Image 1 (cartoon, rainbow, N blue to C red):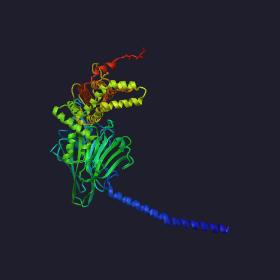
Image 2: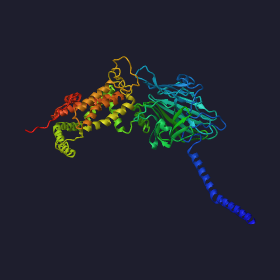
Image 3: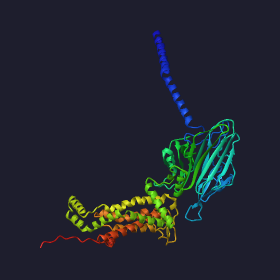
Length: 622
């Protein structure tokens, strides 16, 4: 029994020694090491992340210790009872009117937000009496959309969305800036000078003066905030959503859906993506034709972020920029200048801003795509001729003619080869008959014939291959550039960027009713004209020897007619005009080469029904 007790005490003692040794030599050092790592991480975060700013760089409220919580920059509480009308929201607070040749609206003196912008030169429809395009709407409406500028920091009373500013003027217009001021009553005086040009660019010059006895550290910020996911076109060739060019990180295009899949930032209900130590560029939110973007000082570093914050019912999309720390000693002052673009994405205006203001890659606000080296020259050519004739439809016709002349040598070689192939058609038929049971010898004989007559059997593909990039470039230009929006042609085409409004369902307007939009068949006059010209062009060429291939080529114009029925009218007009020029060019070349133009014979053969080829009878022996 004694031995058992002795053994038990020895075991307990050894166990204690093992535990103490493990704690002293292993667990203790590991725990201390972990504490040091955590301390280093906190120190690094304190250096890179200023107080009052969430991890993604978006400003957050930082009231003075013991003071009430301030609204977070960019937030806009919904009024009791739900959203109110735009007119009612505009009447809730004093405002400074905005009046320029391009935009109208106002600045809300409560919060100093630019939250009311309408585009005077653009209407919702082609009807000149339809409402103007509204870009910005104030908080409290169904879809708030606004820009905000300010300062964020800790242990200081700063202006927020509830701050009522004082203005020295009642109207902001080109050449007539307004100055907004606010004194926090604790030694900090804030001044904001807002200027606007005759287009869509605001310049915001924020300054703060420290009249107190202690030093203050502040961080300038700017943001564009949009409440609710807008309706998007949903086309692959067009980007809609968050956009920016952020220094060395380059062009950033993040759709609304993609933003919602980013990692969590600044809270469980916020997702987004941040870019630190950025110099130059811009960031904002873009639609097909309109955009809003904040533009920090181009030579000062900043942190940019795109975020998607949700309260479970509404998504708030935000593009924000936060500058580096500004340390204000007692009696010191500081100034920062930022810009806001809020308007239509007019190509020449965007390019002028990039050049005149030194904005880094601001031209990428317009989605020229991967093939910008084709789409941009295409637009410049169309725009140049438009200013000569005053009609984008005529410009499309002239540019198409110029392109045909430019590629004339290649197209001529192609059509000459096709004409030669037409001339040797009897020999090709003879070869097929002679080697109908030996495909290898048939192919060898065909190749020898091509070589002898200097025929390229795939030459007919060149006109189509040349046309593909031109077609895509014109499609892109028609689709993305606002200059093509509501641009008329002649007759019933009042918008080259929209499909042909006529419909085969109501016999192109002869029947007195408008076809419902849900009808899947949308064929206007111009798509049918395009299909006819494509059909005629194909009948100028020799029929493919393969019957299946011949049927495919016969039905191809019909397929393209239905496919292009919903495409922009300008694109369909281009295709029809290009086909007509190709038919004329091919006709001239075939006549010069002494080849019979069998267009009418091919057409009669196509439409002949029930005709049977007489069976060949074997010759009888005498």
